Length: 294
Image (cartoon, rainbow, N blue to C red; front, side, top):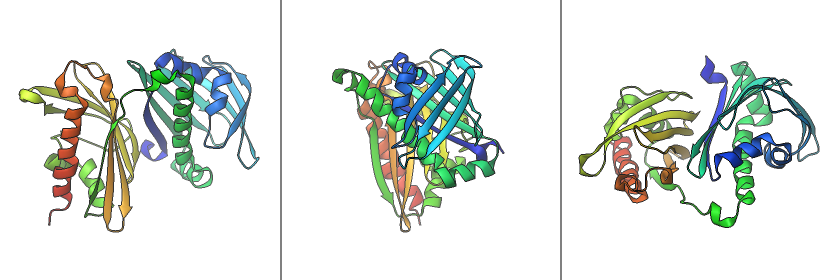
C-alpha cells in the first residue's frame, strides 16, 4: 500500500514564488537551510535540470558526515521538482509550488521503497521530524532574505480547545465521513490519505453557496491532518491543519487556517473575522458537543 511508505508536509511560505524557487535551485542558498536543525552542507555539484545531479555532504551537529546524491527526475519552472535520492535510503522527493499572490504554497512529499524502510528511517534518523524542521528552516531563511516590510502579512487564524474525549474519538470525528456530517459539513466521501481530493458545499452571508475544493497534504494518524482549502471560481488557496495532543483521557486540538489573505479582499465572506466566527462555532461548539455527547 502506497500510503504506508509516504511522508509529506505542506506550508504556505511568506515569500513570492520566484524567491522560493531561487532558494531551492541555487547552491549558495539551499546549503544555508537544507536539512534538520543543526545541520550544515557542503555542495560539490548541483545541476538543476532533468537528469542532472545534486551531490553534497550533510554535516550533523555531532560531527557525523552524511553523503548524499540526488538525480533530478523532473523540473518544471516554479511548479515542480522531482528528486531521486540515489544513496541509501533510496526514495523520491516531490516538491510542488503554487503562487498565492505574494506567498507560495509548498507541498513536500517523500515516497520510500517500502513501509519497512520508512519505519526504519523514522526510527533511526527521525525523518518525519526532520522534514518538518527542514521546512521551518526554509521559512526562517526566506524571511531573513526579504525587507521587514515585505514579511509583515496577516497571521493565520488559530483556535485551541480541549475536549473531554480520548484522541481516537476526536481523530475519528475529523476523518470519518459519517462522523464529520454530524458536526462539520456533508461530504460525499473522505479518506485521510495523502493526495485525496474532496469537495463540499457551504453557505456564506445571505445564503450564498460556495463549493469548497480540498486536497489532503499531510496525515499522521491520531496526531495531525492537513488539507488545502480553496473555492471553486475564486482565486486563492489555503491550508487547514488539525493538530491533536493527548492530555490524559482528554484531547487538546489546535486548528490553524493559513493563507486566508490570498482570497479576494472585496468579498466579506472571506474576511478573517468570518473564518474566525465559523471555526469558533465548528470547533468550540459543534465538535465539542459531538465528541463529548454521552
